[in-house]
Length: 330
Image (cartoon, rainbow, N blue to C red; front, side):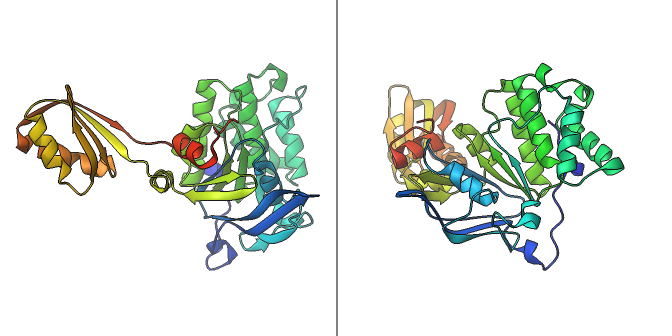
């Protein structure tokens, strides 16, 4: 899915409301009787930022997304899109959102072009403008050559890409993608992820939910972890791993003065732990990408010879399990 400049969001108004956050949620709560589905939720999304909202099943993600999209009203708190308040009655504000739900919102007996023509009509896009825009988004998601084929003939991945195309027709300021890669083949999945990266690079804000941690790690500058309706942690993937005390690990296959090297490495401020092994050295360090050159220099000066280097950075899966006691798919 190659997303070109034709799919960019509206340019922010200089000095206007759009100069602030693309999305702002402040102390939002939603109840269903005695059940608090979303409890005092606050987060913001900057222009051009992809924000990952993660949580196990039943965490409140669907309710939160429904409020952001103006489908549900918040009991308390406030949601603003580019400075304008979002409510179920805020029609003009809703027009700034492209919502791509987990369930496919397509007509299987219609062609890809006919599906998009229908959705363009809902957005008030018609005539030459509709034809031009439909051609643009079909090209953007790599389906231009299949425009006349019925959706029932498409693979799951192609249907997902067409679903995203429908959400881009009106050039939204905020694109909401709710688990867009569920049930797709690896090639389509990678295409979707590359497309999301391109959208963010072009200035579109994206609210992204997924059950695949590696997607959040790849796409999202900020990640919020939701559990039992509450935001229990938020930060960059790097910040979240540090929050739970996870450190990078470096394994050096080395020979020679390994014991001396271990002693010298232990004196480094960035080295949390080091041990000499039969095969070399195992280290726990702060930020391996920055620390590794200094580690190799110290080892070389100690008289050890490094044959191979392996670096393991802790991932969001470990963070999520630590914070919630669950895996993301629970």
